[in-house]
Each structure stands twice: as structure tokens, then as C-alpha cells.
Image 1 (cartoon, rainbow, N blue to C red):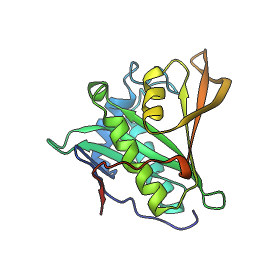
Image 2: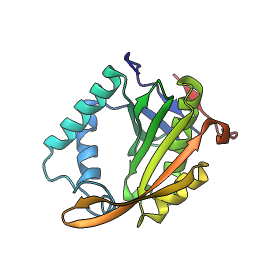
Image 3: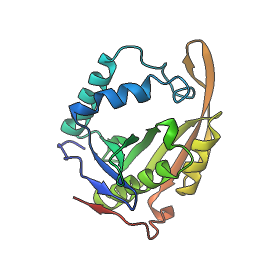
Image 4: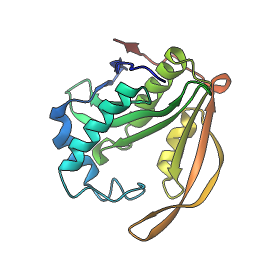
Amino acid sequence: MTASLPTPTLLTARLRLRAFEDADADDLFALHSNAHVLRYWDSPPWNDPVRAEQFLATCRRMEQDGTGVRWAVDRVSDGTFTGWCTLASWNPEHRSASLGYCFKEAAWGHGYATEAAHAVLRWAFDTLDLNRVQAEADTRNAASGRVLEKLGFLLEGTLREDCVVNGDVSDSWVYGLLRREWRPGSGTLSAR
């Protein structure tokens, strides 16, 4: 992408995906400072609240320069911040992008990651006319692999020892989803 594309609000049956706001800094810091949540992440947990402000600045920059979008994900029922979902590394020439997500521990096991990512994929394939979306997951993170497989991603390979965080070496799975393999299903989604 070369032009700015405003972050749309995406609604599902249980979730609202929206643009990040400065007021989200405390929730972001709580999420990214949790060592258990980030145990399979490619960087250590945050220990400085300034990191949340930097994250928000990166969200705005991605949107402005047209390289991606990050959504804050809230539960519709009570407005609680549950995590975030991103579509990054947009390449309009190749019609490709990368999917990522991070959710609070209390949100695990409820299908929120799958539901949010499904909404992002539907928007990406419909609005951006993507041909391919890629995602990576630490090979120890079986739950994330299951989310991607539920969405229709296929495991394409393993990046051996591609991350070293605090001296811990890990491998990553690479998943891919092609437009022709995408099954939008009947999930409720609207964009504003």
C-alpha cells in the first residue's frame, strides 16, 4: 500500500475491532508485560510503560504509510479490551500481507482469536483484494497453530532457530492462506 487507509471498525457477533486510541496504553502495557502471555513471543515482555506509547505510534505510522492496520479487540457485551489483531507488511504488487494477534490470558479458549482473525481476513480479501496472507507461530504454541488451521491456513514450513529471546532459541512455523482456499463462512461481520 502506498496511501493511507483508515482503520475500519469491524463487528462480529461477539467482538468489536477498532482503531487503537491513546487511552488503550494501560491495557496494552498490561497485555505485553505479562510473561506468560508473551512466552512464545519474539521479544521479551515489556517492563516500561513507554513501550505502549511506542506501540500506539507504530499503529498510527502503519496506517498512515499504508503498510498495515492494527485493531484493538473489545468484547461487545461489556466493552472489555481482550487483545489485538494486525494485518501488516502489505505488499500491493504481490497482493500479500501478514496476520498477527495477541490476546489476554483471560480471553484464551473462548474462540476470540479465531473470530477476530476471521473478520480481519474477510476484510483483507474483500477490501484489499489480497491473494495471500501469511502468519507465523512459535512451534511450541500449538494453540496458535490450531487457530490458524481453523481459519484455513496451511502449514508451509518451519523457520529453524529464527528467534532468540533472552537466550531462548526457538523455531517458527510458517502458515499461508491463499484467496482460492479462503472460506469466508457465514460469520456475522460488518465494517464501518
